[in-house]
Image 1 (cartoon, helix red, strand yellow):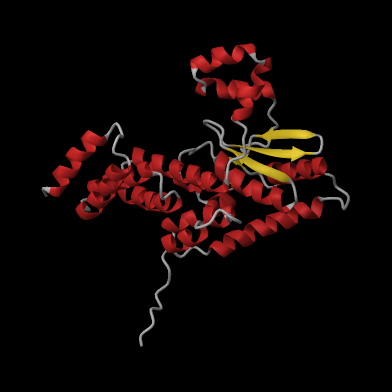
Image 2 (cartoon, rainbow, N blue to C red):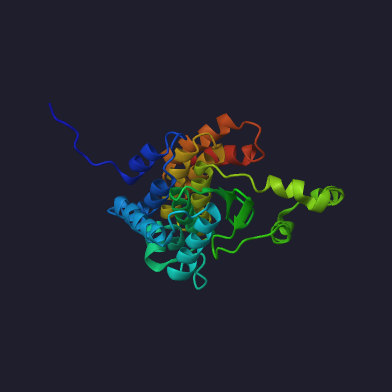
Length: 286
């Protein structure tokens, strides 16, 4: 009897990590995204690098450090001593989403820096969570004395006025009028400060990459990202639709038809139904 000794693909490995929301391994799953660029990447090496950063922070902590002291020292080490920050010279480079590169260069975007920072904060015992804030991913820490919201690019603590200003371009004009009667708009702002589940953090990272490759019309790399999104979010049918359209761009007629038909069956009343049915007919005629 012959045994199948082939190694799992990067997508197989990713699928094994994200199959359950219980104990979701955000850091490991996020680190694995770079295997699309570097299939031989040792994800464990990335995890070990983060563990070394954690020991560096722990070495600076007094034995009796309270949560505020822990937060202050983590921020000092991460942003000042280690120099993590924005890749201002090439903000939209895909490497900014690959944790091995972020660790190497100490440069990234809000969400990739947040994933590293959250791993360190949570490992210290801080009640830290991500916030899927419009336009700019944020993090928050619940301390004994209250809630602190931070910009993961800089470690800056953000007050209500700053958060409201950042949110303003994304608010519906009707909502802005409606919130005028509320105290400082705190209630509507609070809706945007809810904790972001780990699966949604990973989806936002992938969608950042998806948009980069879409803008470059880099269909092979966009397809790799969409394969991960379909695995991560199997019932978000728009990702299946988009994968079908990318397959069509690449001349993968069978795969394109399969994905587009799944989408049309799942979303029969979608506004793009007529256009996609026409596209399916065109592809089926090839």
